[in-house]
Each structure stands twice: as structure tokens, then as C-alpha cells.
Length: 258
Image 1: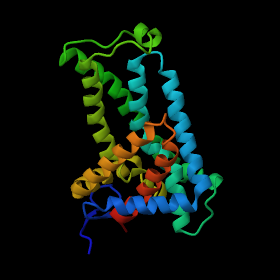
Image 2: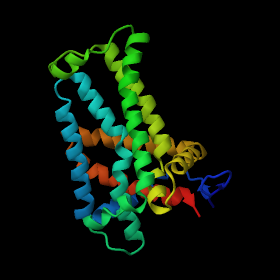
Image 3: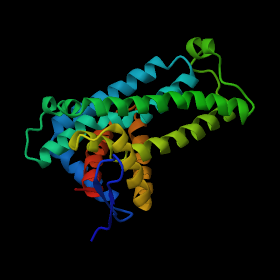
């Protein structure tokens, strides 16, 4: 029987947070895959759109390796907001509603203010990554980021030093952990219960620390599948993105009670 904690203090949304086993993420993936199989066209359509966005960002940043790294990290940091349509599809399937691609777009209209604020927070974090990597380069690793001119007009073959790579990975990993903590159940809460962005992020933080072993496993699965999705020139994301998006909905349904 699941343990739970009630959050009802101050102005925060009243929800029940359930405790799950460490390996429960495998069940979320199985259910997410079942959604993909039952809603192939709509699910893979979202996967194609998410993949296309990533390809565009990579092309825009391809003039310099520094911008390539920024494009990839920015893409991953704002990734949670891109699961909105997929979570809406899973919600509709669970409720016996129509599950076409057009219907998935209604997810954006269920709580546009909450989604907008959450998207802004993710965009700020993505921008902070670019700034933080430069600070790490200068103050910790005693080197410097490329100038704006070099970044914009340099060659993609320009050499990126080992300290720069460490700065990218280190600062990106820190902010990715922050984003994961803030977004575990945020999008489903926003569209399903019309939660504010603040409520959704606060509850996600509580969910993460209440289920730390399960969240560590879930985060590792997300990272691993995303790497696999990126390897074949992003084409793998056509399947990986909807799988993770649907699984996010099923994680929410198990982690959050009435």
C-alpha cells in the first residue's frame, strides 16, 4: 500500500503524494509504450515535431561548437514543456476521449497561463546555463568562453578545450538536475488539475525528495534514452520523445493522488 503525504498548507494546491518503489519507472515506460502503440499517428507526430525543433536548433548553432553545445543543452532543458501534447493524449485515452493529433493540441489551452509561466522558468534556466558555463570557464577553470564574434561566425570545427567541455557538462548537469526536480509532474498537474506553475513546481520538488530512489532511476532512464535518441542524428527522438512524454503522465498518475 502506498505511503503518502498531504500538501495543503498556505496557498499551495492540496494533493496527496504517494511513495513508489525504486524501479517503478519501468512500469511507467511500459504504460507509455502502450500509449505509443495505441496512438501511433498522434504520438509519433509529436515525436517528429520535437525532433524537427531539435534539428533546427542544431542547424542554427552549427557555426561554432560552443553554440552546438548550447543548442543541445537548451533543447534538453526546455524539453518538459514539449511533453504537453503527449500528456494530453494520455489523459484523453484514460478518460475515453478522442485521441487524434488535433485533439492533443487542446492540452495547450487547458491552462495556458500555467504553461506559459512554466515555459518561462525553463527558458530562464536554459539561458542561465549559457551564462553559468562562461562563469565556470573564467572563475574555476581559468579559461574563457569564445567571443560573440567567434561563436557566431567561427567554424564548427573550432577546437573546444577540455576545460570548456568540463564546464559545459558540469554546469549543464547541475541545471538539468534542477529542471528535473521542478518538472517531474509539473506539466500533467498544470493541464489536468489546472495547477499554477508555482504549485506544480513546488509539488514536483516534494515528489522528487519523497521518492528519491525512484527519481534517481527515472532520471537515469530519461538521460539514457535521450542519448540513444540523439545518436542517430536525432531520428531516435521520434520514438523516444513520445515514449517519455506518455510515461511522464503515468508517473504523475501514480505519484499524485486526490
